Image (cartoon, rainbow, N blue to C red; front, side, top):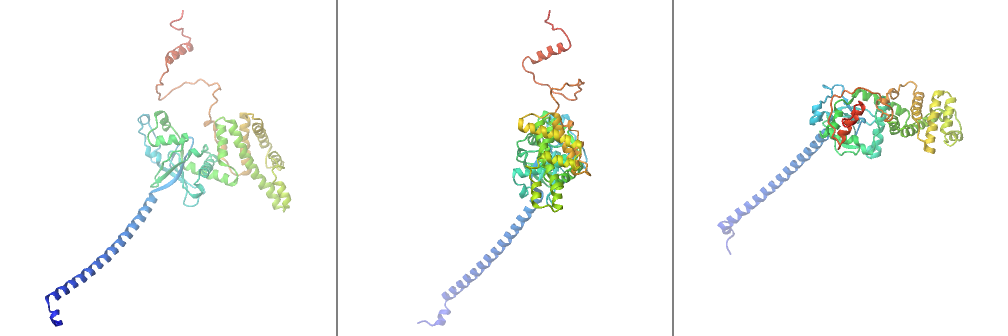
Length: 423
């Protein structure tokens, strides 16, 4: 056997010992590098996560989703601090160069009873935006809420018309300066706004941008406040029916005007009956059987309720007369299919004025100060008064075959000029 000390002193042993030390050092370095890598990876991942959170928060502040509808008829909404009023020239119309950015500008936000901090946002071209809250995320709910807001404007003295499901767009508010709409509803007003916002409207369509109806944002906010106070007072009153009824009057659609307004009238009568008659019975301590009897609509028809309200002094004779005329015309329409007259449809509007005046005697309701003829469709069969035409702009109408010759003959006939080929 060899001496152990000799083995330790041998070169081979020393080489093996150095190799083992080097291996141990490499393993230690590898473990240190691995620990350092994972540490840096965790730091990088944390930084990236924080960056993603910050970016999302930044994007959320810059773009907010919304549900969009439009004021109808079209009007420009001027903010109270607008530097320049809306103005478009005929050259801009013909060249499609109007300032489309201004159409997207936000004019302001109106309190419509949503939870803080949400409001109804209004843009310069009359777009209305609501937040996509959970209770508004169905087409019927969104349409009903929009129509309630529009009815508030109507009651407050700003003429508006109802929207329907095909009037809804989706969109977003960008940097709280602009309102952009995306998916387009199929209603004609949505199509018009899409074209003017994209600078794609034809001259015949874009001519509406030159001298549009305008309203100041402060007027909208004031009208909404008055109108919503009325709707809050008579919670049963459906905004869409009120809008359709008044629109029917303006458009000479007596069927729609009368039938929708009569439903609104019945809603108000039911409200008054519950407040004044049933409510008084409750205050007087009447037994449940009497309260149930007073709430029975089969016993207490609308006609009977109106008579009782008249006898109690709530309705005067003029109101009862208008209500009687409107009620008979509505029954003739419902049961006999008889088209109501203009007089009976206007009686329904007058009856509505009497009822709301009785419900809120201290409140002036600007709806009834509106001149609906300013928004009305004229009777095409009524004689037209001759008046001079002084057009500022015109365009050539493409002629049909032989139409020019026919127009020349008609002009000669009006002037009693004999035809050149006559005897």
